[in-house]
Length: 429
Image (tube, rainbow, N blue to C red; front, side, top):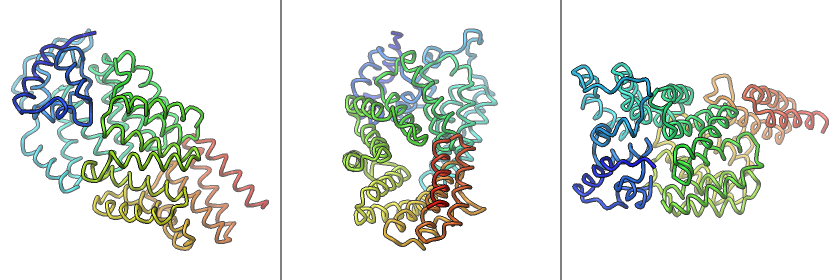
């Protein structure tokens, strides 16, 4: 295995300067034993670990990596050796004011401003030809694009990063970028591409020496959710078992909580409501509003609400629904507000308030719909079910036809087939 003793020594020295334990430095991203292996030079860190360490050690990426950059972020064999920083390179470094603006925007949940600042810094890094800086900023930017529901731009950015020479020669960087790319494609409704990206990342795990790591666990979570979206459930139980086994072994609370969360969503789709409830309540022990970013807590509340509705526990669902509403409002992100409206419509339908459910669904499925792809198709499907309950079968058929076409365009043929069958049942029922 390649060793990085100088990198490990820098990590250890800085950690001790800050008075941190290995456990404190590990946080929820890795384990203390992994930090020990890094410090002894027995592990080559992946990009996500490097970014985590740089943040916790209060160092820039360049300060942390130092002269090891060519070994940790390898260059192509035909690329010229790195040049000493020039005055032009220094000018391309982000000004302190830009960093302050980004931090201020994030603290006030002004994601649009933070995204614009990061776009500017990323372009500067691209113009200056700084691959490590492009990767650092690009990963921050793609996370904010996800928060704002800008999945198309997120996919394009990650695809550009995968095309960097630095990445093309590093399996670990490829895995670190293919995983969020698969998630972005899934969120766009490009499910076949999402599955292909996730499987491609999975095939690279042995080459990247990432089997059994947190990156492996996160990748399995994306693959499970993608297969559930595709309604291809045969592999899902085995993948859930593998994900939870690895997450339990790593014993990192945040990672285990997120894994249980994914498992709960998948088990609910598999029709195992009781197991889904057990998993989501177990996840709650590891995840809470003070420790989880507000947007993730909002999504967790929505998941819990959905699972409780499915299980018929409507009073408990109402409590979680109220929490989801409060956090969605505080977050102020249009994509999250649309997701809450969908959940609210489902709840109203479940308690028999079909007229209100229909109003909410139609606010999301009209000509100016904020939804797209399979999210829009599923909203139409739910709207059609409410219309049938109100005895408005002809309207339900039209909405289902629209949803079927959208599903076909997204290559979700099983979902489209389900809708065409429902149309037949309505017509001949």
